[in-house]
Image 1 (cartoon, rainbow, N blue to C red):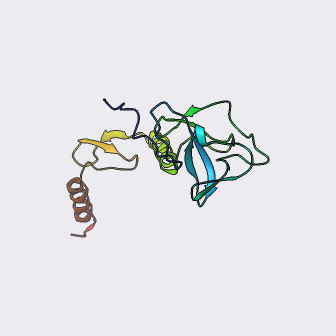
Image 2: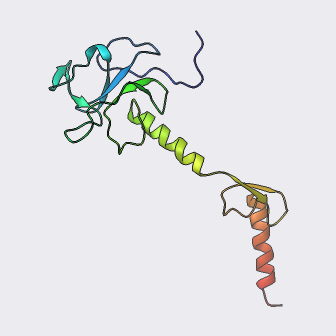
Image 3: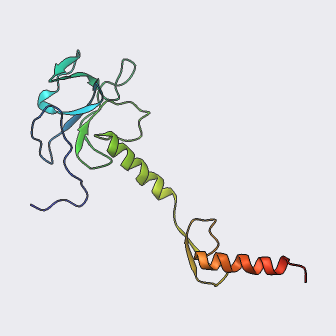
Length: 154
């Protein structure tokens, strides 16, 4: 069985059932913290106990929010189908905190496009930050020494 390069390992569900790559998971607010359960264990309505944990409601849902989205959507971090509440303030539909962080880093990484320009000392290519002027530490040091020589009175 070959792994899909677009997906990471299957998320772990707290209820203990085995899930496949296409099985939908439910992200819930629980006690002691948020966790995932399978569709078989999801009972909407009042809070209920599941093993040593308590399922309170869908993650991202509350009294003033849309209780449930139209259907399962792919997790922005791993691509696994997930159901969670429809809070409009949440940027991503994710199955876990780790996938939320991964999606956020991907988004922020796309905003920082590497800049390529000539080195101020040797003329070579500088790739990286927009305010970077030299291609290496050696070029930066060489430029510093040249500036120091020019500023010394003779």
